[in-house]
Image (tube, rainbow, N blue to C red; front, side, top):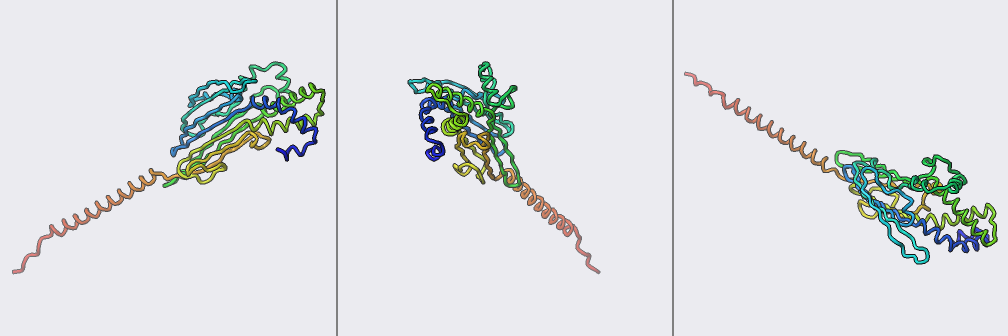
Length: 305
């Protein structure tokens, strides 16, 4: 943090510290934890549990598509000066394949758009967002699972991508407006470059880290590779925040692979071997019986007189 601030002039640092009190409450409004627990079974089916909690959880959809069972509740936070309500979303689902898992990281655009007035729409336009907003303002995740089955093993490849589009542009615009208003209240007018620098600093250092993610994935057999931390022989875990998203904080990808033995393959080979031994034994016994019949039915030669 100190190294980062060292790149800015002293008046930047002073103003950022003055704004710290205000943005403490602003950043607290986005404090959100996403927790995903995924288990991939040998047959390719998936069991997934999702938990989204925090003040910012209200910005996201409750998973309600086919396969999900979800519930929500609200609790009061522990702040005295500015009381807050914390939203808790819990969902669980079982799916035949990874491709059938509906997104459980989705910005609730319809809910937010219903509350927007003309001023909000103007801010959207200033952020470069124009209707229809569905293709420009969203967050989602997508799970892909591929299994390659051999005679004795099954190899599982897991990939999950989190995407965020447009939301940060809108948040950046809100930050600039808030910083400008606070400056004007103190009789200070920021130049566009200064405003951009302050907003970027607060976005990267205060806001994005508030969106915390933890994803735990259990795969069949033994983990071969993962771009997360290996928790046990068959489980990998990822812990990251929105600040870790790449491509201007728009995407984050989880990848892992595993290999497991296929009992059905061994059973099939065992049955085949048993049948082979059985037919060999039957053939051997049949040949032996046939020879006995041939030589046993042969009459002894007559004695010459």
